Length: 418
Length: 194
Image (cartoon, chains in turn green, cyan):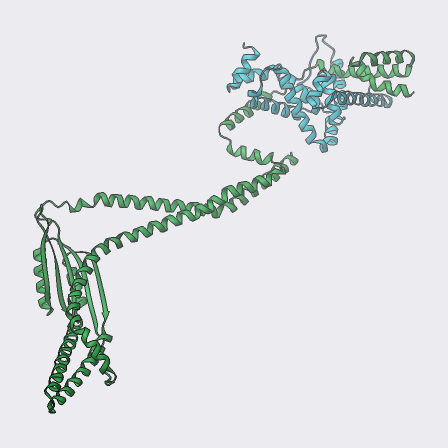
């Protein structure tokens, strides 16, 4: 009967005539002598035939079949064109976590976030740079003008220096001798030299200088020097430097009033505290005076001609020193009592005399400026946007993951329900 | 009337009407396969539609290596296969629901022999009974029975469709037929059907 079960395994294929010739022969041989298996075969054949009868029949789909299908097809066709959302949904629907996915995710994060993080720094860097150049530009501009003023000033101070240096060199030595003997407290009053510089652009040079002269007189100051020259031959425009001395207490007032005269291109104020030097010079002066008295006393006593001559010589030097020191004191007093203002005035075309193009002069420049400004604003905005994006990306990723999860769960829930 | 090839080409260009012509030609075949697999009209209708939808979406992949009939049959078989795998849990329930599902009005096919109303009834009863037997099988057996004994695919084709070896097809078919035979015999003994 072992053979029977073996044969019965082959009967199915025998019915379909799907046996190797050898097997077929074997089955047929067995069937001849085995009624059991014959019955089995008959039953099996009957069964197969019964089911084959189902094939004769072709079922007709329900009436709504084609209409529904048409709707689905049209939907699919429009989806083909639009359906990004569906694609995303489909992606999450068919989403299966594969082993490479976390790795890929990490790689994507690395690729996306690192540059964004770096870009996040980049726009800030540029804006800083922009701001820096913005602020540097006028500085350069100023210093160019300022230098001129400074030169002006340093030249004048050089003059004073030379004036001062000749006597000063000698009194240094004397002072050293005498200083120890004169321990005196002087009432200390702050001595400050104030120097102001204004670069003005005016409509009419001559009118302005007239106004300045009046101003100076009114303030009981004086004009130290005035230098006028034509800086534009073609349009015969004037420019010039004026150096003023103004009483120290009216210094600020004077500066402010001068600024009203035209367009201020540059303005600077410099204060120099000379109290220390002043005190020093004063004490040296006192020492020198004592020395003078003593020498005079010596002169009164009789002595050899040589002695008298020596004393006279010494007395002369001392007196020169005293004068020099007094000069220094006077200078310092003068400097501190009267502040110096250096004015640099330049005439520009007046609106009355000629059609003034100055209104348009800066247009291209201003256009450029505002254009660049806007571009910078956009760049800054873009930078900020990227920074913000960088900040939001983790949340966005979380959000997407969350939405995907909810979608999957919802689909599953829906499927189960249906 | 266009040839099948022309209809396919036009469908590939996105002509929905051309594709509908193809649907009209093959809807019965597709629907019947789906019904044999699923054993009820609702699922059959849904799956047949899904099969056509898939066919339309991937029509550009159809290169004409096989006939369109084979191609679309294969799609519906795959759709049903997937559905059966998905619904393994629901199998028992659907069996109960399907067995005597009497909505035969649409599928009633009157043969040219012009049978009597009783005969028609009996015939349909027999068919419903056979269908219920198929539906009682596990998806693996159900598929081979439908493909071989009802659709008449060759062993090779079935192996290809189910993505398994010829040996597997043979043994599954053998086992499925035996199961069906045993069921029929036991029913006969109980006197349920004759």
